[in-house]
Structure formats: structure tokens, C-alpha cells
Amino acid sequence: MALQVLCIGAHPDDCEGSVGGTIALFCRRGDRVKVISATEGSRGHYEPAYLENPDLLIDRRRAESLAAARAGGYEFETLGFRDGDVYVDRDSTEAMVRAIRRAGEPGRGPDLVLMNRPSDYHRDHRYTAQLVLDATYMLTVPFLCPDVPAIRRMPVFAYWQDGFTEYGEFRADVVVAIDETIAVKREMMLAHESQYLEWLPYNAEPGSALYGLPEEEAPRRQAVAKALDRRSAQTAARHADRLPEGTTYAEAFQISEYGRRPSSEELTTMFPTRLL
Image 1: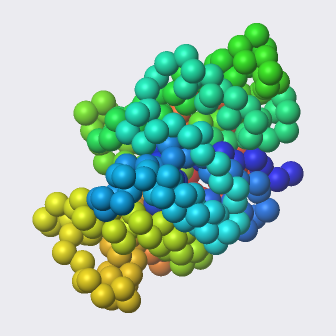
Image 2 (image 1 turned 45 degrees about the horizontal axis):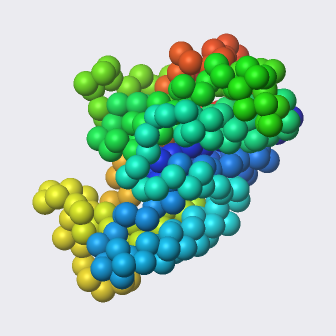
């Protein structure tokens, strides 16, 4: 039976950059995947035209997200929160409850939800994660948001890898080899041109992978692709003893204590190309 997988990020490019290889593997396996961005991405740029008319950037980022979705084979949706203005309140929590319930068959919802941990450098990321966690139990409560059927079984929630340690280090419960989909992940990420070719290099600090890129488009894209591969390569190197020999690229996940706790046997069939 195909799984319904939901990936939730704060911004239109977050999911592809963090777990694009695994998303592509799910899609290749025949699972149904939906990517949700909490925000519409209206502040992630520096051009004055986008400040004067935010709709131009919103439209551009939606077009980029749809292009990435076509490359990966999944569905994209945005909750429409304003970029930089994600807050944990009643309206946003109920919007998240409805969005998660609607991913999948009525009353069943998704089987697996992928997200970032609530410890993160960007408050949109932190609060989006908190909204998901606040929604977890309420997904099963019929009298909350009764316009969308409550689900009868809690999904599994899993965090994607990060390097933050203030509230505890990331724990790699699942490691997924993504060599066979790394090219698709690059395509998905580079579809977000406004971010990976423009905004992130503009906002990069000296010494970072996206700082000081060439101005010409072709070498710039090549340099960005190389920089984007680095994170997946570091994950594979860190967990080489848990991956097939010769694996170059990987993504890792931590199973959340919120939501349903899957057995080891279930995890071996839930995640594609993984070793526990």
C-alpha cells in the first residue's frame, strides 16, 4: 500500500533543501507526497521591486515551488502565512490541524510527517515546527476544526537532520542513502532560483558555502550545486557505517516522541533505502 507522506517547512524551499532526496525516493516508490510551506515567501529577497510589490515575489516563489514539485513528482501547497510572521496562536494552529488532516484520505490523514526540529536559527522554522507539534494530539479531536474530519490514527512524525545542540543534539534514528536521487534533489533545489542563486548567496557570511559565488549564470549554478551537495555528503560520511558501501549522499531523520511511535519493523518498510 502506498504511503501518504507530508513534508512541512516554513518557507517554499525548506523541504527540498533538507530532504529532497528522500522525497524523490518516496515518489519513485509510488508513495503520495505533499510538500507544505507555511509561508508565501514574500521577504526572502533584496530587490526593491519585491519590497514595493510583494506579490511579484510571492508569484515567483510559487512558480519555483511548482517547478520543483514537477521535478520531484509531488504536490505543493502553501498555508499563506506572511514570510517572517509565523506565530503560534489559535488561528495558525487550527490552520495547521486542517492542513495535516487533509493530507491523505478523510479520517486517515498522512502516514508520515517530515519536519524540522523546533530548535533552529530562524524563528519561522521554530514556530512552524511548534505549530506542527501543537497540532499532533488535536488531529484526533473531532470537536476541534469539525469542518475537516479528525483522523483516527496518529501519523509518525520525524525531524530532518540539523546541527543545533542548545536543546539537545540531533539523533539519527533513520539514515537514507540518496545517491540515486541526488540529481533530482539538485534539480528541485535549483528550481528555487530566487533563493539558491540570489537571496542565500546575497545573505551568506564569509566562509559559508554560498559566499562569493561567480556572477555568470552557468558557473554560478555549478558552484551552487556543489555547495548544495555538501550537506548530503557530510551526512553520508558521518553515518558511513550504517549505509551501503560506497554511498556518497544521505539524509537522516529523528523519530519524534510526539505522534505515533513506530516499531523497528515498521520503520524498515516506511523509509526507502534506509538502514537503522
